[in-house]
Amino acid sequence: MLRYLTAGESHARTLVAILEGMPAGLKINPLKINHELRRRQQGVGRGKRMQIEKDKAQIISGLKGSVTLGSPIAILIENKDFSIERLGTVKFARPGHADLAGALKYGFKDIRCVLERASARETAARVGIGAICKMLLKEFKIRIISRSVSIGAESKKAAILKKVREARNKKDTLGGIFEVIAKGVPVGLGSYVSADRRLDAKLTQSIMSIPGIKAVGIGMGFACADKFGSQVHDAIYYSKAKGFYRKTNNAGGIEGGVSNGENIIIRACMKPISTLLNPLDSVNINSKKPAKATVERSDICAVESAGVIAESAVAFVLAEALLDKFGSDALIDIKNNYQNYLKRIC
Ligand code: EPS
Image 1 (cartoon, rainbow, N blue to C red):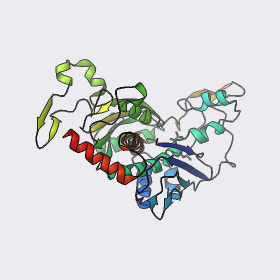
Image 2 (cartoon, helix red, strand yellow):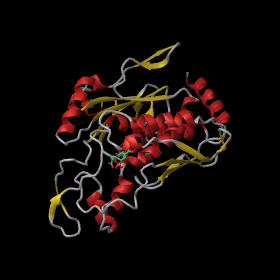
Image 3 (tube, rainbow, N blue to C red):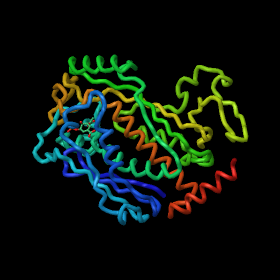
Image 4 (tube, rainbow, N blue to C red):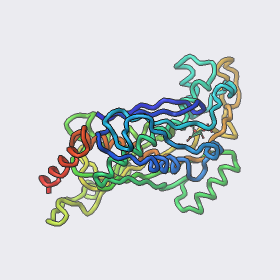
């Protein structure tokens, strides 16, 4: 079983992630983890915090030299802005954030106790986990990429930059749509036999868990609702050179909860960032008197970062499904099992 847990608050000393279930014998390149962390910090519309932080992963357990032992891998990422004890009390819940529901649920009088953990800063730890999962997938020639499809309904770079400038000037924020593509995924990851083993369900859950995500679709997604079946389903062909293949990929690489050998294509919508410099109406959670929402330092837009985080989410789910199918202790055994399987299904 592959599983992970993260800990850490946005302005606490460190973020921590523990990944358990990685097989023994995988070479880890820490530079690649830091490369992914850097990618997460970039993109149009990011705020001042990203100029402060230079996220770097320290792997403190689970390796001998640079090779995995099969034991839990612990990653630390230090926060340069380690100011949690000095930051002021927050009383005016920001619409769109976990502020109000979180304070009521846990009985806090200070919303900072909610927002420190609810912050998307936590996703740096997930990207550390995802980077290691990507290294495992690379051994099987599986690659995951992402791109922004649109930001604020604009899809061309110049128009996006203009829209983000406009949002910044208006003290507003923007969301958008991004796409994640997993290439080289073999047929047969996930399963139709039980609800909790369906690959599409696991992938959408993992992407939906990224802060700000409001919708996730696979392949044609919502658009297939308007079409005839003959315009949606991907006809099946076979050739000696290619094996079973399709000429279209409206299914987005998954049929019946199982990968079908085509690229896995996922699109997700991120809502505009909830912290507005020109705040919406809110209420003091203690006195219950009307007030404007608190303004905290934040981003204008984080769609490109969300795409990078979603790559990590997909990498974790595919790594889990791969280990589930081909074994999970020693990388060499998993590779042998994988090659035997490929021979059988060709
Ligand atoms: C983020 C760190 C945060 C925010 C942002 C993402 O840092 P700070 O709150 O200190 O500016 O920039 O958090 C949110 C979008 C959020 O919802 O809280 C990061 O590391 O990505």
